Length: 155
Image (cartoon, rainbow, N blue to C red; front, side, top):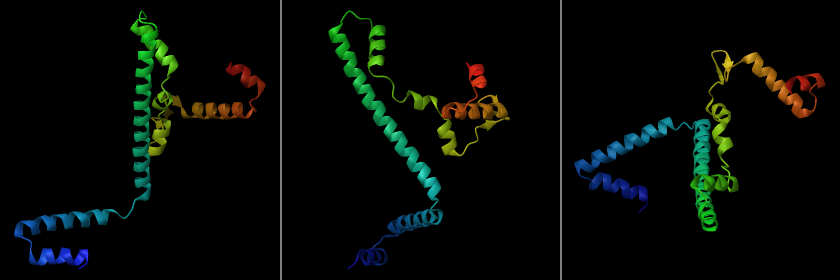
């Protein structure tokens, strides 16, 4: 007998009233989930991406902390008279925070979330036209096409 037939046989011939209520609730929930699962692939992809990024960040952070603990022990073993503050400085130089730039730059998160970077006519507190000009200057500088007088003015 197939799984489906076994389930139907159980429901029709063997379930108590209480078990039927549980099954009914489960079926209603499943129907609701199927109805709402008209597959919003964009939302699913964003959620999956965020979950994966968070998981990777936590893994990297945990690995980094383990390395820092190891480095701390190594530095203290070689230099027992070193203060905790000096040891911290040495350990941070040995193993920099690889996620620091990610923590500081939230623009990508705004873009992924669909939020606008423009608030009250400003981007990060700068007027939109000023921000646009800075972006153009950055691109021109990166391409080597920034006019020499503009380059001097920026330095």
